[in-house]
Image (cartoon, rainbow, N blue to C red):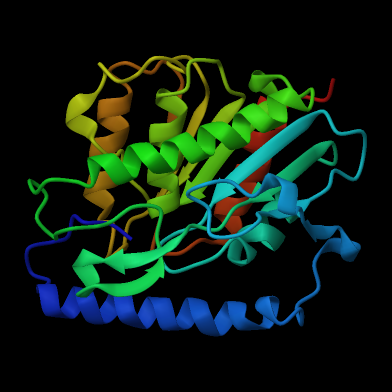
Length: 273
C-alpha cells in the first residue's frame, strides 16, 4: 500500500479500499494459517531460531531443492503475511536458492484510523509531502539487515542474496538494499516506492551498482503508476543498473508476466556457482 494517490480519490475511499484489501488478504491466507494450503512438496518450514525483532513470527522458509548457494528474501505488502508470497516466490526461484518470507509485526496503522494489521512501518497520511515514519522505516530495515547477516553467517555471500517485496514490502526492500553496506545480488521491487526519498542519495551507503528490477502496473489505483516512474527516474540518478517494467492494465497486484520477468531476473543475478 502507498501513501501517494491521485487527487481525485478521497481519503474515505482509500481507507475503505485498504480495509477491503486487508480482508481479502486475510481470506486468502487463513487457509495457510490453518495448514490447509500445500507448498512445493512439503518444503515449507518455519524456523523459530530465525525469529527476529520487528518480525511478528518466524519467517516462512522454502529450502533450496539443490545445493544451497543463494537466498531470496521477499517482503509482503500491508495486511498480508509471509505465507501470501511464499508459493509464488518459491515457484520462480532457481533450485539452488532458499526463500525467506518474513511476516511484519501487527501494529495500528494511522492511515487506517488505527486499525491493527501486519505492517512494516506506520503509514501516516495520504499527503505526498507529509512526514513519514522515519523511525519505523529504519527499524524495519534493521530487521531485514539482520536476516541478510544471518544468511552471511551461514555461509552465503552477500552478493548471492537477493531481496524483494511488493507494495510496502517493496518499498522496504529498496530502502534496506541502499542502506546495506555490502553488495547484494539484486533487488526486486513490485508496485512500490522509495521511502524517505528526500534523504537519498546521502543514505545510499551501498548497492549503487546492484541490479534492480522495478515492476509496476499502469492501472494501479493505490500506488499510482506515475510514482513508480518517478521512483525509477530518481533511482537512476545514483544507481547504475535499474530496469523499470510496465504491465499494461495491471492494478495493485501481480501477474504471471511479472513473475516470469522476476524468474529471469533472479536467474541472471544468481547464476549457479
